[in-house]
Length: 85
Image 1 (tube, rainbow, N blue to C red):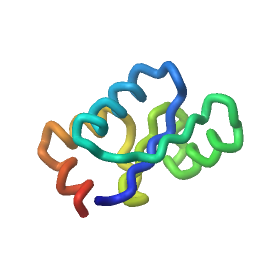
Image 2: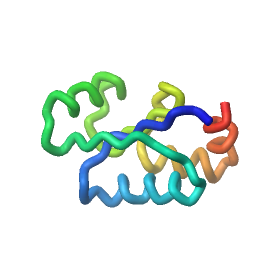
Image 3: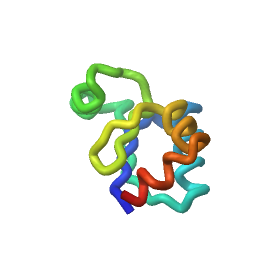
């Protein structure tokens, strides 16, 4: 399974929804809270092509977007193959 990284803030409902989807699938992920560290947030923005909203999700180093995009991939049946590689 590919490495999954998710940039979040503690009370973001979209972050919670994305993590719940990954949890339901049994996917381990590395979570980075960007709420209190401007350097981490700037690193996220750079990796995400200028996007500042959370969550920002990366699978195998590839930026897939936020919660809506993650759920859309799952709905289309494309998330599991992406996770598997």
